[in-house]
Image 1: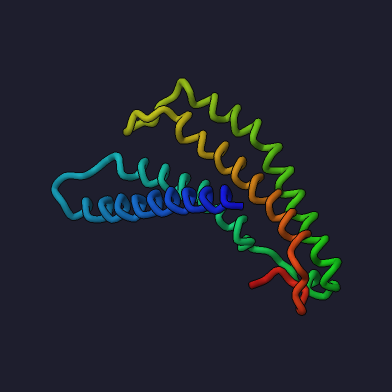
Image 2: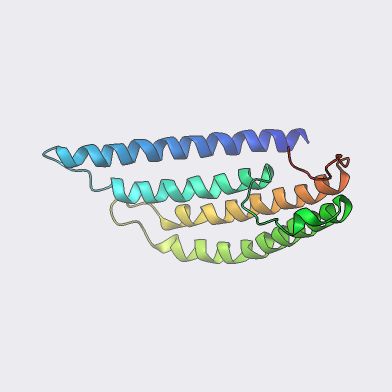
Length: 161
């Protein structure tokens, strides 16, 4: 479990850096509207930083089990059945994420011969964020299956903290 702790810390750092850079670039873009010169690269950079923020933020939400979910009817289930239901949901999410890794790789390969318009960055670097996102989502989904099944049942029966 120590490996997952360090992985989570690294993902948190990358997410923090990309989101902080996003804020700085957007503020710079806004300020440039009042200056006699502009920064044409800020729109593209903000889009790329937003993609990276989502690609690394989503696995953090999966790790903490903070994805949006509608559990009106699930809340009515007995605690034991709810645990197995949660495990199946995480198993399906993990399998789907793992399935999408191949297509994310193909998408990344499409960008190998293309560069961004203003920054001249290979689009394969930007597209590779989807590979990272699906790999990390798969890892944390399968980890959640293990944790949901092995964690001791609480009195209320939920995995909520």
